Image 1: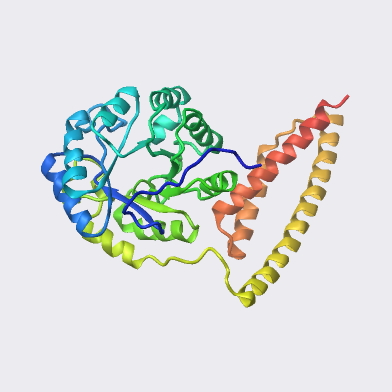
Image 2: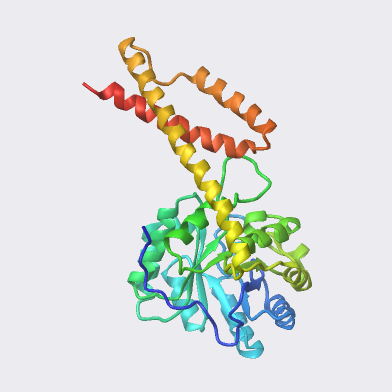
Length: 362
């Protein structure tokens, strides 16, 4: 079921209404010279929305935590002298008030703040009566309901120019990325709120400039609306997240390489072929559901047998055996280990649920 929000177009005068909407600038505003130098190069590269962090929520207290409100006049110069829109992150009510006083054009709420409904509610209330676009980063954990809750709080306060920032999700396991993209989460958000723009943050997903193009292209292939990419006049000397920032020139080259595919099918021949393939997929999906039904029927029988013989539901060695065997089998079939683990964990969880129901029956 779709979520109903009162939304206005997330567009800006003088910014082309086409994909991708690009927001670029340094992870942190470090000095007036660095801000102006980066902004000039970005403007010359065709970027109209300049982003820079002023208040930086760092994991450790001794890390660079941003220049704070001292940097607001620098962003005001960018806006007035270079005719660019300016965007920064806010994490509390004071940040909001300071940013509004200095004429910030766009605010965004960071991942750690999104995870705190109390903080989001306070920010929402502080924005009542203000017509300003607000972007909301996904929470640190893959919780689409928590993400949606932030939009609902802001929308209830009268904020209608909203956009989502997909910046990836924290994971305990080491992966190729700084934050696992978990594309299924923003895809689900798009399904539930179709009119909500989604802007991907490849910088925070990747954690490395070498992977930025790959993630940016994937976002375009998903038909997402924009990109927010950390860009610095001298990224190797950046005071925060140096390894994931690129120069304005490198950003321009990345954007030129992007392949923008069409979302709509304007050929009857293409549509007919696609519909045939979709019909084939539907048949396999029907069979999958039927197979799952039969498997759960067997799980219920196993649960009944365990109940009759006073055996615990969870049999760890058996589960471990199943998982190892299916991972090996998947590798031979060209299926990824990550995929097969997700599928069989879900199946195992549902099997346990069915067995527990049997155990609890009188």
